[in-house]
Image 1: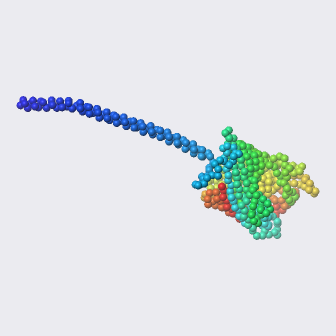
Image 2: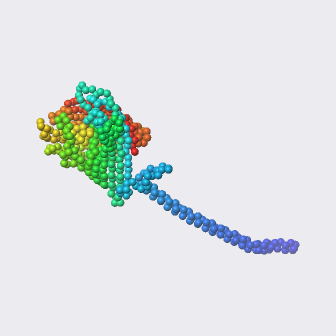
Image 3: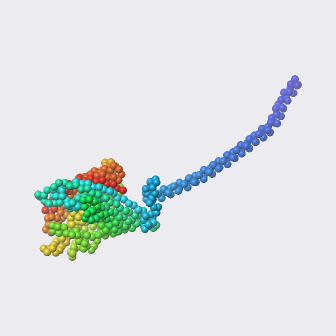
Amino acid sequence: MNTRFRSMARRPLATALFVALLAPGMAFAQSAREQALEARVAELEKQVQLLLSAQQQQQGQIEQTQSQVTAVQSAQASAPAVAAVPAGKQPIQSTTITTAANPGSVFSYGGFIKLDAMVTDTSDGPIADGNSGRLFYVPSTIPVAGEGVSGGDPYTDFHAQFSRFWFGVDNVTDNGDKFKAYIEADFFGGGSNALAGNETSTNTYAVTLRQAYVSWNNWLAGQTWSNFQDVAALPDAVDFVGVTDGTTFVRQAQVRYTNGAWSVSAENPETTLQGFNARLPNSGDDVMPDITGRWLTKGDWGHFTVAGLLRQFKYGDETDTGAAVSVSGKFNMGDSDDLRYMVNAGSGIGRYMAFGLGADTVVELDANGNIIDINALDGYGGFVSWRHVWSPKLRTNLMYSAAEFDNDPAITGYAATERAQSVHANVIYSPFPKLDIGAEVGYGKRELEDDREGDLKRFQTSVKYSF
């Protein structure tokens, strides 16, 4: 029993000794494993730091590249659009062809090609071949002969004389001064010689100056639309103008100053004269330039403007003065419709309205043809036009226009034009951007002081491509 007891007592002791001997080994093994883990963690931390550093460097390069791309895009957006050079093609030269221009100048070019084809029927005989009334609606060219005169058969005309082109250059100095030069021409100038200008063979027509001006900040000098004319109110016509009777329409040399909504100008003077039963040659005796002033306001709804005109007339030793006013604008009626209008009235408004349908002045002569007096002629006119857009490719326009002059038949005779009016309706189809195919019907009438009248009926088509 003692032996058994001693044996049992020795077992815990052996166990304790075994544990005591094993513990340092376990502790040593655990310490080595921890060191290995710590070394691995340190290596991982080092690799993470290297990755973070590489990522930060890469992010900096990305941000720098993005900044460079943004700068290039901004420069491209501010620079004029340049067509891409086709593959295999090279530009004619790598430097500018306008070596005399100011550095940083921006050049532009544009225009359109237009073919007009029309059939005309006039009540009192045909408009003379070669007359401008054969090319577009000019009320003063409507023949008026009276009773017993037959108009004959309709006649047809084709031409491309209203095709035009223009050049422009813009420049802004380091100080912010803005300069602009502009020149525009078409071919509505007749033939360059008697043979080339007729319709027998070549139909060659001379280049005609329309506009040529330079502007500096608020100032403009050169030939352009009169400050008395509101070009933005003109309707969308197939005819060159359409509402010729009642609109102002003048381009001439001038000096103009514009400040915000206000503009004033001094423009080339010229006096048209009405004698007894006949128009007289223009007078170039004028001393004072024509003075105009305009006020304009505009917004999403359209625009509204009022213009005034002051003139002096001189023929020989006789003088007179005149004044006129024009109110016009465009009113947007929703997304698909707009109304365009103009009302003109004044004394001596003649050559500014309806392509000179009435004269500026009436000249009173004695029996020997000597000048007794010169008086400004009162005139009135206007138009209204409704435009409706059916779709992005189809639109229509309906226009009415009229003008009237207050002649004194005792001085002018009864052959002077008293009034003219017209109505036009068209449809314009644009199968592709910038390409317009139009058809328009028009009716116009001219009346004289003796109540004789003549009318014009016309069907006109056009193909126009703008660039």
